[in-house]
Image 1 (cartoon, rainbow, N blue to C red):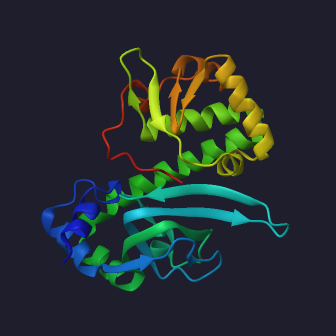
Image 2: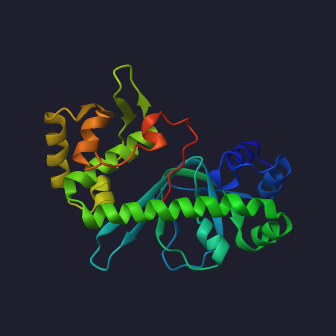
Length: 250
């Protein structure tokens, strides 16, 4: 059993509260796999044969239209899991998955995992809770794209990004690396790259953000106003910096 893989599994929200024996049982099913930069890991519509637990690298999940337009759904990183829906319901993949840089992951097949869940029912409740959380996040993402102007969608994306990747500075601002390209941001929020470029410049001029190389500093209150979130309650992630185990929900 790979120690890094077992550690990655133990940190997943998917197995929150699981006993060491249950974690060992899941880790015992996993087979280490490696992918090259740009390699297709699976395609939309392919059979869902298992899930991947990322140990190193990044995997982009996206949908490409017949006209070639790409909508990025999520960028999973080390400590995340992808393909868990298909591994539970046996359905087909709902998105394309591509390696962004070299990727190392543990693959858990659907059939042995189903047997494990039947034998260890204590594993089932945390999985249901995580899937419900992801459904809520998907609803929020669809709401942002459908109901809010581009300015608000971009501000909401930046708030999500610094919640996940950032830290709180002494002046109360949040700072985070922003290595994702403007084209990728545009795909996240349903816009063109030139529009994102202009809006980021406008955000910077209004001091809602400040860019220093690959680091972005965000005035959370200003971004919340731009995101039209003044009437919404703060989330726990906005009140406190993440603890390093926060996982993306797509």
